[in-house]
Amino acid sequence: MKLLRVGTAGAERPALLDADGALRDLSGLVPDIDGPLLADDAALGRIRAAEASGELPVLDATGLRIGPPVGRIGKIVCIGLNYHDHARETGAEPPAEPVVFLKAPDTVVGPYDDVLVPRRSRKTDWEVELAVVIGRTARYLASAEEGLAHVAGYAVAHDVSEREFQIERGGTWDKGKNCETFNPLGPWLVTADEVPDPQRLSLRLWVNGELKQDGSTAQQIFPVGEVVRYVSQFMTLYPGDVVNTGTPAGVAIGRPEPKPYLRGGDVVELEVEGLGRQRQELKGA
Image (tube, rainbow, N blue to C red; front, side):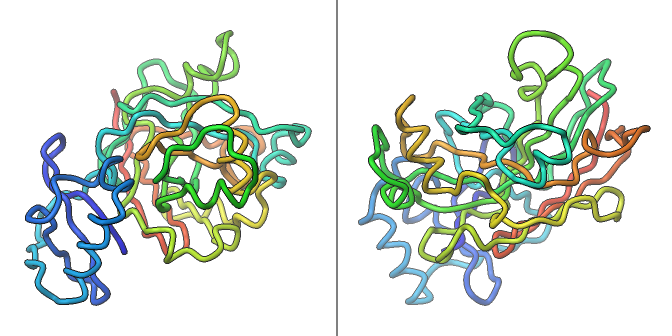
């Protein structure tokens, strides 16, 4: 299934994109697309049955905003330097263990919402990523297979980063990762049963129409199941939590000087195979 949330920011309602591309209203069945729903097999079964029967009301998509596909996210766990080609382009050694950092849930916006370049920013960068949405409480998992079994679905994430704040201003990466609007998510949550192998997905990103990133999750140093297993050793993952699994090569920081960092007026488009496409305009904060 392709699950999504539509409407004005803060007042989104649940919806489904059917096999014919029609938008269907789920608000008569469930209150939201969130952790409690993703952990409720019976509720998900009712949605599947209603989709199959054709009984779900059609929504007019004209002018309808698409919001983040998951509501009330508890936490966003991010994995840094998780692609062999990205590690090479930045001159970093592939990490022996996953590099883990956190983004605040309030960085999440819809896939077509504006992204704000922070004040005094000189190095705002792009990163297309595969996002994993957790469906079962994960703590101290024993294997990568268990990790995959705890995934509810997948989505496109844009892990926008300010590199000066991240690397040159001291402390941890958090300052360069948590600026407002720095995690567009969506357009859909595609349930795990429709993604048989998350290590065979292409990822692409364009800036002002120019292809900048063209990679594959096959290049991940730590695959999805192992990432979920590993993170569960250090924190509990709950239904509705999001894990951003890293970005392939092609980011601005990995390019020759002068590096083409994002500025107000730029347009970024990105996609992950089978998970949909995003588009954001960059504006000043």
